[in-house]
Amino acid sequence: MQTQDVAIRPNVRVILKSDAEQLDEVVVTAMGIKRDRKALGYAAQDLNSEQLNKAGTTSLASAIQGKLTGVDIRQSSGAPGASSQIVIRGARSFDGNNQPLYVIDGMPVNATADFDTGKSVTGANYADRSIDINPEDIESVNILKGQAASALYGIRASNGVIVITTKRGSKNNMNKPSVTISTNLSAQRVSRKFERQNIYSQGNSIAAGYDPSSSMTWGPKISELANDPKYGGNMNNQYTAADGMREGQYYNPKRAQAGLDGWTTPQIYDNVGDFLGTGFTENTNVNLSQSINGINYSFGVNNSHQNGIIPSTGMDRWGARGLVDWKINPQWNTGFSMNYSSTKITSAPGANDGIMNVVYSAPAEYDLKGIPNHEPGNPTNQILFRSTSFTNPYWWAEHNEYLQHTNRAFGNTYLEYQPDLGL
Image 1 (spheres, rainbow, N blue to C red):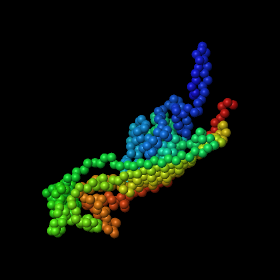
Image 2 (cartoon, one colour):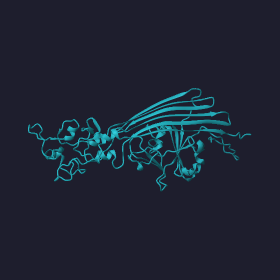
Image 3 (cartoon, rainbow, N blue to C red):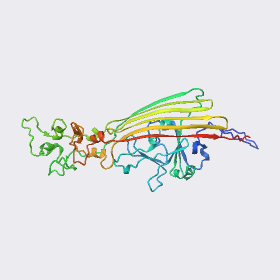
């Protein structure tokens, strides 16, 4: 209601006047209905478009993370398209399904992952479908909490509701179209790595000597490997340095097998740092909107491209949306909205034999980056740094990535009648 100043007198009569332009305390609830926040019987929080897109993120979970009280957002990893879990006011279900209900422009939308990562053969991380929602298309996000909120949408909303309102045609641009183009660029690097021991080489014990097939790193000191007859496969001292040109070096058959210089000096390699690169994210959005003759429309296209810090991982998402509102006359309104997205995500294998587990288990004295991951001319024959149970991570990144490709479309239409209460 509008604020009014009333003079003090014995009898005061005040006629309340609605204020349709005052939106600060308005909350979007079921089917896009706008309610005064003070009239709600349950808790609600909201974020506007400016608050959502300050960081230029490509996912809804990242856009709202840390901005709402009582909303716990957990992302499985920093990989492109990684799944996320949003929990409102704590866990409520014994079966682990505590995800809230998503409602986009009045339409309930399923945002759970298509597959269960725990039952995956590859152990790859499956993206939840909230990744299909472009934060740049959102006008506002309202979080509905409490048991009373579930009364609007039934049992599906027992864990809360995330109400998303997409951008509409602006009434400020009467008879004049408005075009908005935005691009966000960002880079990602690993901020901290686990500390690894880089003193001892492969082997079960110092006394037993160097063992290139061992899964343990309790062998001789790396600084003393040149004196170990077993280093580099030199089991019978068949490789010598009689000319004095190979002082402190030993012959490594795996390097020779890969077509490299077989003679090498024992040293410490940063296998984790060499494997993890720099991630890059580009997000581009184009939107056209207008309000003319009672018709408000908004159309947009977007593209999000992301390269992960793990080789061969990334995400590419194309999307399009359209929304039209038409005020036919003072009593009748109609309109529709549509959303389409095509998302491709390339993930690395996970679980116990996950790609990062293998990288961290690589011995410090093994040149994981310098030695090719397969024999020349035979890409299916890996060059392993341990037993056959440890796949070369570079080979895995090139030949065993997991691809998710999802095409999704959803939308709704409405016809609204507002009776003339003055009759």
